[in-house]
Image (tube, rainbow, N blue to C red; front, side, top):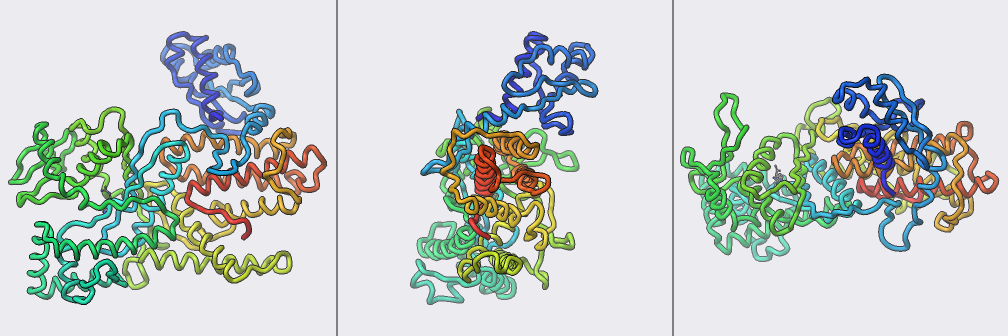
Length: 597
Ligand code: ARG
C-alpha cells in the first residue's frame, strides 16, 4: 500500500504536466493534511508557487490543475479554497478498498500491515546509548538508548539493515586511574577477572577519583598505569578488559530491561590501531596542518567568535589521539567495512558542534560521498519537575536503574487502582501477573513520554502525566489495545478468523473517520523513517486512539458486538485493524502490548 499522500502527489503531478507542460512537471505538488477537516482530508499547495513562477493568478492555476486532474477511485472532485489551495476528500470506497487489501497477520514473522518494504534497502549505522564505561548509566543515557532503539526499529520495519552500535567510552586517562584503584582496593578480584564484580560502579569511580585527588602516590601510580595501558602491557590490559566487561554487564541489564537488543558493544578502543592511519590518510589529502605542535584539520565555515578558524584537533602535541580522531575512525569503519549509507548519531544537543565538524571532515576527505546521509539526531535534556537539571533529592545524578525501579513501582500502583475500580467485573490478577504488567507499563510509560516530545527541546519529567490513563500516554495506548482485544473475546470471535473477503462498510461518520486514520499509517511511517521524529508516531497513535474512542462510543459511535450483519463483521475488522496498528506502532516505539491490563 503506498501512502495516500504519495498517490495524491502522483495524480497532481500528472495534472500539472498536462496543464502546464515542462514548468508544471518541475513543481512539487506540496500535498499536506487538510488544515481544516471541514474542507477535506488533504490539500495541494502548489498553485501559489507555480503562479509566482509563471506570473499567473494562483486561483487560475489551481483551476487548471483541477480541470486536468484525474481523481477516479481516490477522491471526490477537488475544490479550490482561499488563495488557491486545492482540497481533496477521499471517498469511502477508496478508503475501504485500500484497507481491504491489507493482508491478515502472517503466521510467522512481523505484521507489515500492508506497508511495502523499501525498494532501495541500505545499511544504516545507528550510534546509540554509547555510555562511558567508567561510570554507571544514569538518566542522561535513557534518551539516547530509547530514541536510538525506536529509530532502529522503524528503519528495520521499512526494510533497511540496521547496525546498532554502542560506541562506549572505554579508553582514556580515567581508565588508568580505575585500573590502579582496582589493584589497590581489591587485589583479590584480580585473580578471577572474568567474574569481576563491582556492585556500584558510581561509588567505585568516586572513590578512585577521591584517592587520585588526595593521594599523590596513588595519582603517580594511576599515571604510570595509563602509560602501561597505552603501551599495550598485557597485565594492565587484562585488568582494564575485566573492568570494561563488568561495566558492560551493568549496561546490559539496563538494556535488557529496556527491551534493547542486537546492540553491538564496540568501544572507542576498537579503533586504536587505525588512528595513526586515519591521521596519515587525512594528511595525504592535504587536510592536516600543524598548530602549536598538534595535528589539526581546518574546515570551511568553522570559525571561533573572534573569527579565527576553529581547528578539529586529531593528534595532540604529545602524540595522543582524541575523541574526534576516534569518531573519524569509527565513521570510516562504518562506511567502508559495514557498507553503511546512512550514519545516525543519537547524541545530546551539546555535541552539535563536534558532529558538524566530523561530518564536514568526512565529506572533505571523500569518505562520505553524495550517496551517504550523515545525521546527528540531537536530543534535549530531561529536566526535573522544577525545570532544572534532573537530580536526586540530595543533588546527585539519578541512576538509570533507580529510575526504572521507580517507574515500575508507580505503575504497580496504577495497575492496582485499575483493578480496584473494576473489582468484581473481571478475574483478579495474580501477584506475578500484576508484577509483569507493572514492569511493562512502567517501562513503556518512561519510553513513551520520552519519545512523545520533540527531540531537540528539553522536557520536564513528570510521573503523573506519563502514568496517566488518559491522554497521549503509554498506559492509555496499552489500555486501548487491551480493550479492543477484549471486545473480540466478548464477541466470541478470534480476530484472525474474520473472513478477509468480507466487505468493509464505512457508512457512519465515525467508521469513516477511524478508517481514514488507519489509512494514514503508511505516510506516517514514511515520514518518520525519513525525518527520524518519533513524536510523529506518538501523535499519530493519539489521533488513532481518539478516532477509535469515538467509533466505539455509545452515543457518537456505532454498535459493534450487538450490531446486525454485515455491519458486525465489518466493524470487528476495523477493531482488529486498529489493534494491529496500535501493536505495530507501539512495537516501533519499543513497547510491548498486553492482552489484559
Ligand atoms: N561516550 C560519549 C559521551 O558520553 C558519547 C558518544 C557518542 N557517540 C559518538 N560516536 N561520539 O559523551
